[in-house]
Length: 228
Image (cartoon, rainbow, N blue to C red; front, side):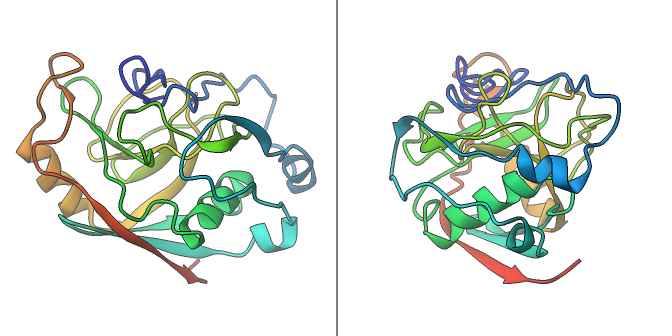
């Protein structure tokens, strides 16, 4: 979804947003939500390029993946905490936790901010270009009936089932096609996102779409078990 122009949303097509290798834009044609067993069976991490800051490929244990957790991003603009939707997007949340615990995001920065039409802050690319990825991809989840109100955390992608490491925060209610896996809900730090958005961006991808004026450097991501 949001991979950079070209990749934000594509590199991710974000709908205009995402990483070029990561965005997944599924339309959610299934009749209803998949049963837990079906979701677990569908979780496969497939080797893919690029492999930036490579940390390996996660294993998927449905029991461990179902365990709830909260993630706190310690950024240069303040802390942002979200509740992981492990019950609805276990493959995605398992990947995020794996990368966070491997310190994949440490020292990276959020490379894209949109302030017109779409209202998101995109992060998760260690190269900062909008085209980076972790060395694997995995399927879309939780798309049926997906909406993107303020506080949503979702995956950026470059087309259906191309999720990797790039993700975005929705800082203001926004309308997107149900093509980007929602996998978290901000529980604190929405004010931080609003501050970043108020600072504006440089329009490098077009009006209202560019690099945040206020640098958003991710110092580390803390994972806290429990919380649901």
